[in-house]
Image (cartoon, rainbow, N blue to C red):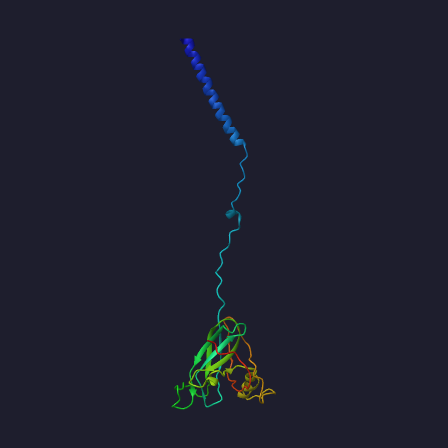
Length: 210
């Protein structure tokens, strides 16, 4: 019995030592093998986009100028800035009647002595425009479809005369009544765009925008 117990104990000791030895070899193998390099994912490999302010729309500009009409009054008008590139794009402002006596219809707006009627179109997108004015009072179709314009005649003849300067040659009829493109830049005001030329003959201009 003693011999049998000793034999069993010896087998148990050998099995226990073998178990510890195997565990130690696994630990050594694990520590000896090189660590696999970490491959960055697509998200971590790509550079991080820096935050920047969102793009804002270009600031609008403003257009302003004088009004005129070959009469003792200026009829109620709509002044249009019509895009040269696309005539479907336009900006506009309505102006009242000026002058014509106390019984004028519609009633005339008052202006300070020594000043002239003016218009101002705000919110004009940067671009290049032709500037025309169409009547809004109760007149015939021909008059409604005949605009006042900002033209070379205004620059060469009317504005110099108003300033007391000598007009450019060629101001006698018929004169040059071609439209002058007006460039509006972001955040700027373009002034002296006077819509005062009603003196043309056969020129054809953009139709009143609808």
